[in-house]
Amino acid sequence: MQRSKFTFARIKYNSGDWDTDQRMPSNLLNSLLEYTTIPLDPEEKTVELSSNDIFKYPFCYLSGHKLVQFNQQEAANFKKYVQNGGFVFVDDCNHDIDGLFARSFEKQMASLFGPQALRKIPNNHQIYHSFFKFEKGPPTTSFELNGWGDDLVHDYLKAILVNDRIGVLYSNKDYGCEWDYDFRNKRFLAEDNTKFGVNIILYAMGINN
Image (cartoon, rainbow, N blue to C red):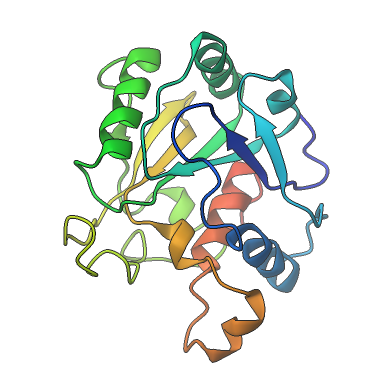
């Protein structure tokens, strides 16, 4: 895997709608440029889950609203990628725990890694301190109480651990849509809401304060 330069790699899978929150990657890349000194690829890459190209990138992003049902090659690649040190940030754009994306994705993870593999991570986990400090765990998004999801603020994230490191970080909080805006509009926010995205990426890359 190419760890010398960060590339935002988005996973394309055959089921569902994988191409969500299209401005989010450039927003996070801008935040990395603004707050860190890590070398960056300025362009998002789309990677077919069924392709061996996925193994080039230590960080991948997967999202959607609809069904997640990997075909045989996609399932094999996903499992191999995670078990060999890859990091997948998975974000449910429905921001609920009983929607189609959530139910189908969690079923896929149970099938690949076992029914108990996807677990809540404690709110003092290293990922909440890898760069910026989030003492209360995952920051809340404006989408969690907008009436479209389950009307709950999820005070935890889930993860699959491999050798005590997160291999799959799973969110029902809809960070993708929260960060889906032109990065130049961050100046209008009282607090930059992409800072947790910086934490996720630096943790995935093995870069910690």
